[in-house]
Length: 254
Image (cartoon, rainbow, N blue to C red; front, side, top):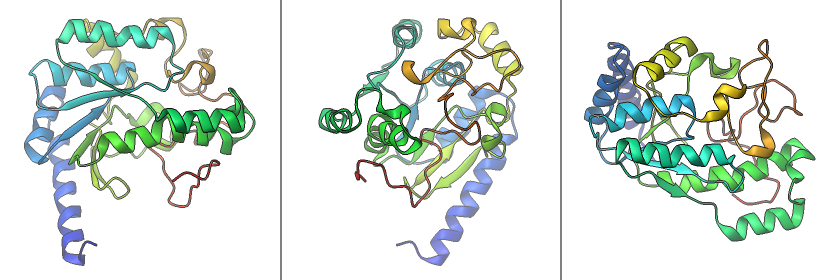
């Protein structure tokens, strides 16, 4: 267990890193600041979204020493998988593909059914836990930092996303280098750098998850309205970025 002094030191270090990232608008420079400040392995978990493709470009262009991986849930759109091939060809860097444990998925489907995630929020979170959260936990084990493509204007629940914070669950520094970017700035960066993105973005899918859990949205809807659209619109997350300490997956797995 960390001592009080150690906890203060971590908080001070993360606060300073947050300030240093904010000092520059250049994404590649922000990645450089992160790589310099965080010791050990830094992992980038890409969802292959337009946000994460921008971050991938800033990592791959200078060949930053960052471990890049994606979680294959087994329920992705074919267009999402196409992004892996396009990105590997463009950047010539390895993108590791992490899979859920087959036994956990088999137990989940045997209990809840192949589309049981629509029966209740607990069932949906259990599906996300088996297919996303547990694989992510394995991939982040031992890492010193975790880079994401979270942006503050993606949803109300992400409005206070910092550039750097201490993730007490995973025991590492969580880093969000485009936290302050607007969608317009993101689109301009992608266009200016000819970054490969998911073909579904042009078909009304600004936020893309698993195929059964994602629909296109109308122009007036929130950009995450197409995710788990049958649920209440407030605070919808899969558990990767919002893990309440008292959450117990419906399967009983930790």
